[in-house]
Image (tube, rainbow, N blue to C red; front, top):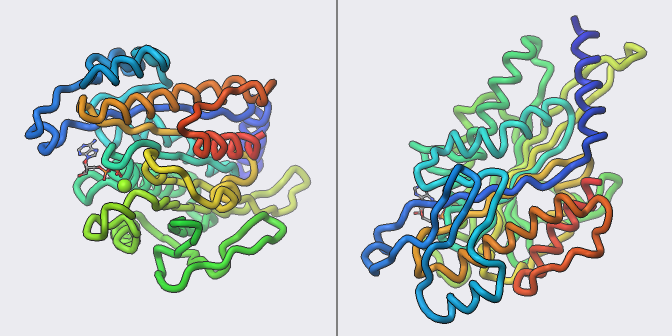
Length: 344
Ligand code: ADP
Ligand code: MG
């Protein structure tokens, strides 16, 4: 049985290698917030067929001009989630496949991208009642591990870190910033906590607690709150027999990334994020947007950039140099290109 299992693993990973990697691009619209409604907002976004996003209204003449100058008002993505979409739906469409791949010894990453307040942390972390992608991914991972082996072969380690103003902090064990150093595997954060997780039950509390250590806490100055990236890394190790029946160790790594607000320049350490993407990797991006016409400019920027990220996926294989990056978000564009390069 073991041998059959191994053969299956080999086939799947070969197929994936041949198919190459690409960025899947998703959009999630959040519900109108009370504050926005009280400020007299109208909804300026419409989602049709779970794929198409229309910008339907603009707040003022400037927005109208931007709309004409940029790419228009209709965008199509791998999937677009209306404000009624559940956390589970978002998880299963964007991330469940990557979890499956991690269990086959491959790497994957999921980013949330968007302006401050657009719903990135809700999507990634969620609440106790409505856990987000990070928690659902780990839950799913443990379920799948239980289904596939009863011999305790799989070992899961978590690390949760923050990149803020070019420093890296351990969210599971806050203290002094971590020191980055280069080794055979790339750039690593020395002394980062590798928390061995045995079940989902402990993970939500762990992540919530970790998040309180983030520099994004709403109690802290809003000015600084949107500059922190949070990265959850889930490393799965297991042993299989290779074709010559030798026992080999396989490692799959899933990175779940709550990026800083896109309205800020990404003055971040690209090396740090890049090193987290190392190896064969598949990437999904979730662009978060507000429905309010008062955020029209930010929403249009986010959609415009998400639309370009879609092109990187299809063009990057042949002619990466030809890609014209949107001016306003060059740093984010570079970051995604770096990730994409690593994927190839
Ligand atoms: P960001 O991390 O992008 O700055 P948040 O995730 O903190 O934004 O979201 C801002 C506010 O909107 C929070 O109060 C959050 O709970 C709420 N929110 C975001 N997305 C949703 C959603 N899909 N459903 C319900 N509430 C949401
Ligand atoms: Mg946030």
